[in-house]
Image 1 (cartoon, chains in turn brown, yellow):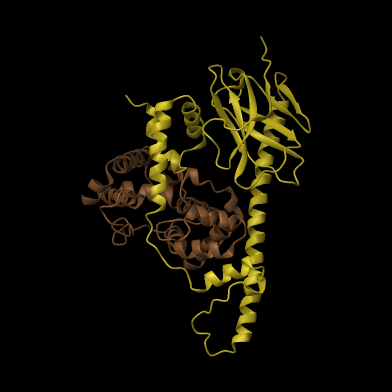
Image 2 (tube, helix red, strand yellow):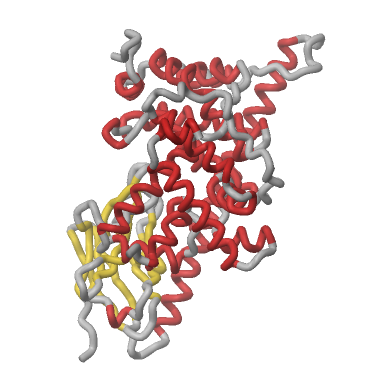
Length: 191
Length: 248
């Protein structure tokens, strides 16, 4: 049980694994907007995003018994499934990545957790700021790799730049994000 | 001082490396604790990136659609109303929508199935062509393997970095698992040669194996069951494998 008296996510997942639809709907109510947000961010197409969101929750239903609470949170597990499904959709549709926003990366800077809390939300906050702070070309390369599943070579072809330049941008950008992730979340949130 | 391989970890956790770089990096990771620790950091960053998208509420009908599907009421699949249909007889549009969605769903499923089958056939064709090419060399060698109901052959030429593994009887795995073939290096480390799955319909499967070094420098191979995206080093028991008997 969580502090609110409601079952925690791990308990809900155990109940889902036993075929409890109410537990499933509780998780849906809690995380549907997060899952759909990632689908929309990746696919930028409402209809496809909704299909991916639906598929992600169907996977939650059918694979709940494979979830291991010792290896991470339900939301992270669900978002990882969502990303894989969205990337599959990219490949099936042979999609060309849409033009990405380099100035405004679509970050939810308003909907963040309390700065003073030492939770994962605080760390995601620092990561959000770090990503927003990256030079636009580094951020673009990371977004093409992570949210569109492009390899370094495919990014180079897509952007019509040398492969070595892509490698450098990804390396520098990810090193900065790693440093941001490693530092104290509260300090990061106040930057 | 950090290893040069650490420069690749950011691209690795996003799945952006080419296969050659990925295989070489995984070989290094299997043996380097410092890089494994750095990898854990980058994996956390990748996990964090999943959480950065702005929340967007899905269509209000999706919850009911899912609930109906779980309850086994396929007739309720997607009853989302679209703008502009408000004045039409609802039952007609509902029936039409259900029919179209069922057809659309069937088409999507069929397209996916064909695409997946196409990928499988391409991989099989590539493996078969490589096997034929290897067979044309008098110096090619074959390692035979057998474990209860599983048996196969590993065909290779000592000077080439590619080989073919033909195997019968490997059972299908759950969706979140895959077979990973490891090549044994003289220093005791393991390198990924292939990550693959089988289906119930495939009694025989031929897998193209890619090695970072000629097979003459590899001592043998083993197959384990790993998570569907593969592991940096073997974590499961060996299902089947063999030691190579290289020419003197």
